[in-house]
Length: 304
Image (tube, rainbow, N blue to C red):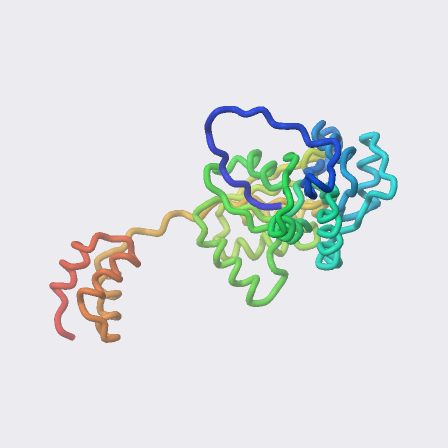
């Protein structure tokens, strides 16, 4: 699952239906099919059509997908092919062979849109590079669902998926999130969500706004909204259950640079041997201030 790109505005076009069959002459077709993130009623008619028409259905868990097909009244037969994190590299070769033979392969994950924090990204890249048609039946996405009901700004946002569990990679990612001015969407398991909220409070400050969404579209859907410090207390009082989407408010804009900040930055560059003209341009760009202002402060510098 990942942040979706803004669509363009223009003349409406009628969407062509997914073809019911393919042939070797037409070449292979890979169709990414979004599936419900909780409520099976969210399975779209075009998704049913694509899954019924596909020669092969590449899925994250065959047992889970078999239940979905049964709910939709679609015969599974022997069309299911497991493609998950552990076997994705080998499965890509197998799927490419099917596409080379002109077959229509549908791709689903256990929930949501394939390729977003789930297997599928590598498969799409390989199929596109090989010249095969890649299309999609859009639909549910936990990231977008949580974002739009969070109550936080939706105009600009970033998607972080699952954070590294520990070490330098996690520390670096948390630092990036703390400085990010756009709304951030994060996935987390119930076993680690409390630790992640604690870490976010440490790097972002306890008062940063956050929404915790879980069990989206299901009977016990819950969205909690408040500050990070209160979120930590909430998770202590209410043991986490179900997969979480954390929607975090962006960082406030950095404070405007003061004259002493500009002078200190100039002195540092000049002490390092940078000529004054280059130092002025560099400081202006780094601190986001006008060159004229930096120049005036530079003139007043003594030769120390």
